[in-house]
Image (cartoon, rainbow, N blue to C red; front, side, top):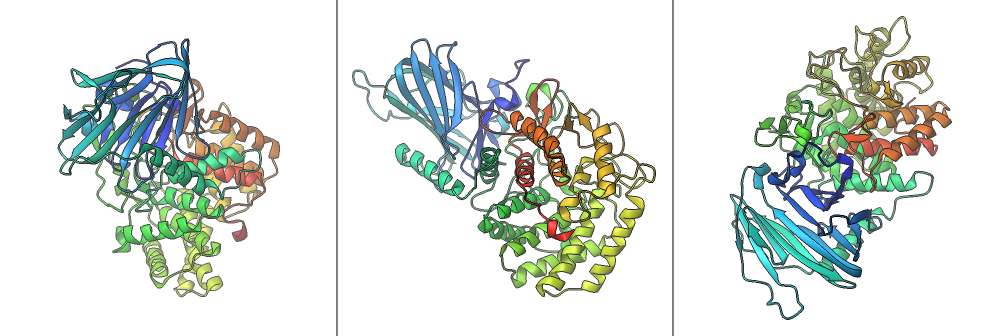
Length: 608
């Protein structure tokens, strides 16, 4: 494996709202899972090297230079290659048509003549299966001046892939084709996945598919207000959230990747291709704030299906269709990004108790109710059942929002979200005429508030603490005003911000917490967490520190890569992205920060 991997920020996203591909600025698809975000990979060079699967498509001139952009408000990626002999573009996308799980890479000649090479290494099931590949009859017999075309069929176990395009020749366990384009010439390559037991699919019309993809994405984005200083960033972030929302199930995955490290060479490498109730609830609120009420209905339907059953069995996360069994496993065959092992699939946090999750769900469902989404008997019955579970576990310590792998604690943020769950239950009865045990909820709500006031505030410093019994702070405390527990200018919040600035800033960006102190439970460290830094922007804006908010917002937006994507963390020393990408939490926090700077009071201003 190369000792210098492709930087995480060098990747662009392709999506059909069922799965996603990552394309490097060197023209290589290094990550692709089909037919779902959480399926076994077809290309996994991202977590190893080229031998673990990739599809490279770029000019044969090694000195060719590339610039990239998305085609308007879409996920059709346009890479413009310039070399000494000419200019050409690669237009690539994933068709949005139901039942078509494919990646299309179209080479378009612009001027002069440009030679291209396509090299394909298929490795199914996280590079654990080298498929059997055979050449089928050519699509067309080449005449003079015409490009020979062909079809490859690759099969291993349940997976089959066809590749239609320039005829490829085998070399060991890879396939390669070379050709050139002149101005106006178009050459298409199409990789399509199907279950191996099905017949080989017929080719589809690429012209129709690319136009349909452009129209679909542009139509979805049309209602987004892109006015204001950060309007384009907000629009792209909302598009990223849509790209991570499964078209059929409505499940919202936390990121498109697994095991991209929070620290190079470290072990904090997690699989984020699942639906965290917390992240999905926050995404839902971003959708609602920008007018996408149908997303609220679809996610509520997903929630009803996922958590159906005994409320005591509610998990913090689920599979894309609501699957509950997500065991964490390590893949020894993949060395990891930049040698950062282990590579994991599944996520052991599924078995944790995180007391804040039901509060996040209740806050989001209240936002949907206030936004005009009508309750049904079933949906409110679910919320009552969730509140019953809050009551049953009212005093239970938890692992917290950051999924600490140390001993459970009474995390202040978690306790505030318990308060928020009870508060939303009380208000649903008092303000919306719904039924429930409001007396119990009100009594417990006030008891939790009194507990936080007594045990969640440092007596000497006057700031909120990470958990009872410590004077450490945690960036999640920046969310307390957002759910209405206190005002942003509460003296305790101002003291908390001052303590965060003293202890959690690294080159002006915010760490989640100090890993060397408290309940982290893991070796090594991490880098500033982008979502937390956006939360600080929101806090600054709410307390009149407009210049500080604006400066930090500008810096954070500048961290986004050339096509507007953000990962989980940022290494300020190396100037590089860290963690899984693109990260839903980073993008929805960007949206919240921009809304705050535009004067929108936030998700719970009416609750202060």
